Image 1 (cartoon, rainbow over the protein chains, first blue to last red):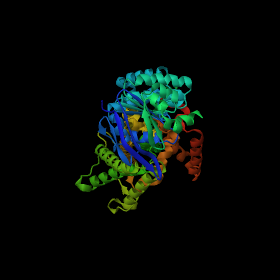
Image 2 (cartoon, rainbow over the protein chains, first blue to last red):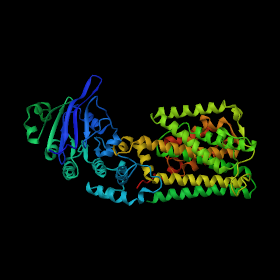
Image 3 (cartoon, each protein chain N blue to C red):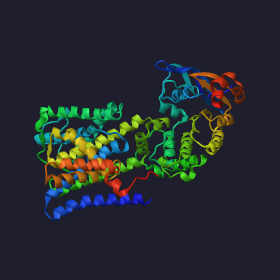
Length: 250
Length: 326
């Protein structure tokens, strides 16, 4: 079996008395979309924080590309190739869409201490930025300030920035949040293409999107993984139905 | 985009007006106005430094008077030892030449800014403001109680430091030196803002979590920005010492830190020529209304309040509109 792109082993963190994440182990295999679902408060966002590095686990180990990253800060993990998007669009509001992507590209290219050359004439950045925007369907909005983009466009720009990092794993936190049916369908298409580039750990509430995209699904409830399996297995799982799907259906 | 063109026109107008004013004063034999224009240019230069930290990096330093004062003391101490013919601190010989003094002023204030920044940048918001103020006050009281260089009486510079090929004692020639330094600093500011470093610095202000998630730790970017900022303000301090031919702890007083912030707010935060516009407004206000009433600062306060409430972009923002970041 191939080595996991990302692996969590018995990861846990508590906030006061709350066991937000309680002994979670999961893997993200090359080429797959692994969806992480669970009701509100299940610990999905906390888990995303632990994987991206904004939180440190109390115990457990996180390896990325075979390397132990448990103690590394956010920026170092990103440099190793962990490209994340945020649940609430997190952009540079005063920058145009293109400049947001250029910022991602320059971060990937190395340290930021280049003082002399103006970025807007930096072909290495501008052409790749336009390619990334085209890939998510934002080519015509390249010069619009991020703050003035629509909600759906901001969600796409998040993906374009993750794409620009050329990551070895994507960490997407509810990319469909707040999108209409049409926007979701478009984005499902984009993500489906994305999996050819790198595996995706996808936190998502939209079940149709999850079932359309995921190779494997893990279900988180009260900080613990209650099931991991293929879409068909998860649909059948009794514990999942009570914890989550049943609740959503009622 | 026509708005960018408008800002460039405004900048050119400001640059030419600041150059023309002392020339007119020279023609009319009114040296007071040459000195006034020089003061505007020096304060603008100090504010260009702060604008890098505050405008681009979002670091609201309430202690930039410290770097201004350090630059001033470097000029004063070097000139003092050159005049006395005694060796300076650490056995460094004194000098009456501006160029080596500037280099020293920028390096020392830049290093001090790096140290203060490294400690202060662990905080943010109001705590950052207060910590930078606290460090500046420490340096202020240190200068106040340092008898070797005049303590609270300050230290006179008997002969204005020299610049190769110029007679700096002539006000117009000294103004030329200051003006060129200001334009170079504005050029450096523009260059940095357009660079990869500038992009990271502006991103660190707007969304540090996002910058980190892209693989660039905000701390290092902000620290380097803060050190360069301190160095530019230090250069302004060295020039101010030469203008007044006197350095004293008053250069490090917190009121000066406040004035630099006021200059930036009046001119337009983060704008290329905001410091020039703001310094001209502040000094102009002081001259015009200070002549009528000693309560001119009350008027200034009202104007500042109006700017903050209704014209967030300052003078440049109001006249030229929002900035473009293509």
